[in-house]
Length: 149
Length: 177
Image (tube, rainbow over all chains, first blue to last red; front, side, top):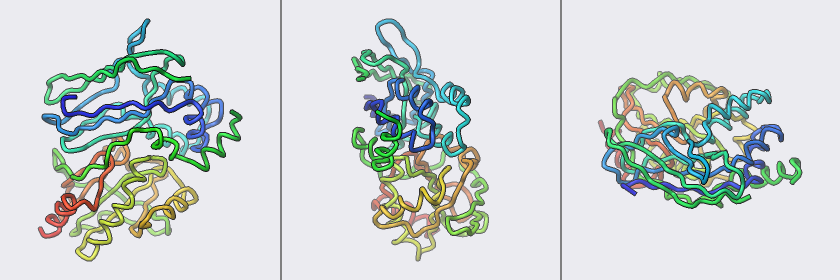
């Protein structure tokens, strides 16, 4: 869409638990995250007419009863403060998330990272991704995504 | 599932759990010009061999600085190509520095053993991720190319095939300058 690739692939709760237990997060902390409906997210500038700039706070997770941005990295880090994580665990958590903001040059800049919707299992939602190229707004919508339990 | 059991599953499969289920795009083949060329930030870190490398001492060379971690799928995918790039261009004066973010030697070393070809360039250890803010990195992997004058010339956000002919040519041209 508009020279940009956007994809979501769900990371099931057990996969999210396994990943973060191995990065040193305590089980109680991984549990909250694993149940937040996590997606491996890829955004890539293949052939957009310029630099693709985005901020996750501009994106929307739209379900039957609400529309809101994905849960922010900052909010997760705030929640995790309660668990007295090691520095290594905090770094791994922070940098495994999809970037809150970035600018991708044409020709293949991209990122892959985790994105949490915060929805309950079995919820169906649309993801509305928004970005701009030289100030011109664009959006791409992934429709009827179901958060598997 | 019980956390201990999950931990073992994760230990065995590690990050490989993730790419198996992800629809991974191919690694890309080009470097992009740094929009606002500036002097490379400071970078002085210990290596896995307990030596210290200071990028300031590498002025006059072309230096590829790659920020990565073992849990980052595209970082893992691009690592063999980074070694291939190093193999074909080190005699021409190219230096490769791979800055690991937040992990210890006991974590990094086993991963390096799985990479084919295994990296022979220095792996630097940034335990507190300080370099990411210095270099304005927003996501992993991110790679910069520093020219002989110590300024940032190219960058690459996301995984690359570093030994692709197009990318290799960009670096060889820079080495000739």
